[in-house]
Picture (tube, rainbow, N blue to C red):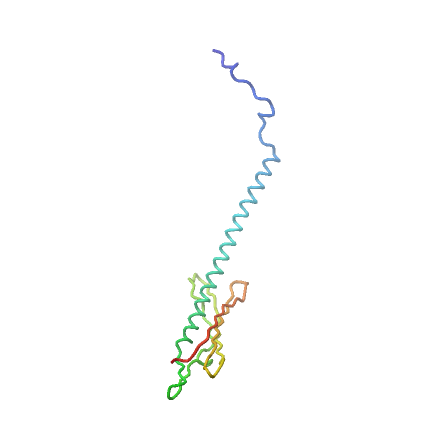
Length: 152
């Protein structure tokens, strides 16, 4: 049995491998793809970090708003009571409620503004602004506004 006749040699163009140009183009495409993936992961991490800080600032502003809603305001009582005033809610600077690792504390400033809208019927507007910044970006502001009537 003669095996040499069963194998035909392939033509020269089918036996050749990739050229240097083809290899460089494929390496370039792979590099751009991997670079795009890494950039996407970094961008996702930054956005997740910003979302964490924003949610913590919103929680801090909501906490102050709930404090103003819980304050006593009863103009019909004797003597009348009005604890919903600007002086009872001073500006506070504190760190956001996020997990800390070393020195990554982010500080936020809570400012409460109370405005008398009308005296008859009594109505006040309460606005809470929580200002924060992260790294070299910011400042960002989370604001909450509500209207408050007296306790009846």
